[in-house]
Image (cartoon, rainbow over all chains, first blue to last red; front, side):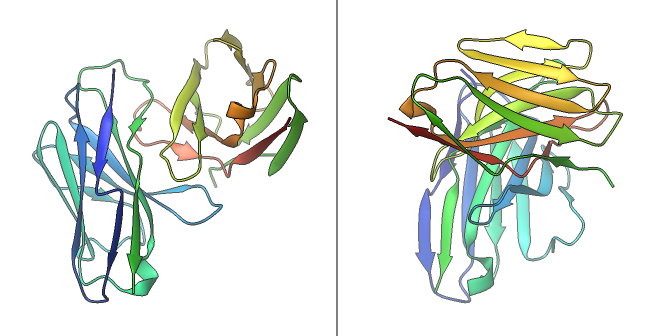
Length: 118
Length: 112
């Protein structure tokens, strides 16, 4: 149980392109999802908290106009990297919390999206 | 500031030995701790968690120990197997905060 699917797993595109990454909870509903960025051999850096039906909460230093987050349903959050440039190349990972779960619960992670901007 | 960190960046063990991965945290308000395993090119996989009202919790081949006095967390893996080779992260949060704070990670290398 608690499966999170992330798509695509890998994307390579030209500079200036906008890229959308989907994060789906397959067997549970999630009012809260999270988006992380991970550089090689580094830890996960929280970018934003995605809230179903409301605006995302961004961490300090993360450009909300650059990384657009939409959480329109209880099973889907999307991250759009707008006008991507080579410095946006990274491993992006989403996670989700089970709706109605106990207050302290683990986040369930997708398998990440490797974004490469040429 | 708040931080969660690890003592050893890389741990190399022989297959069959026990592994101990350590983590220190600084936020005295932290009341929930999780260990994740991340294999190359994949997302973190939940291993075990522990709440601050406990000091030990056991799973299958894994044990998490929590010492709130010195703000230290450890993950013990019994009879380490090649499939245990991965990067292990500790993470924490506290009541009222949904997001996790991750440590810097420890790479576990299991030698056959």
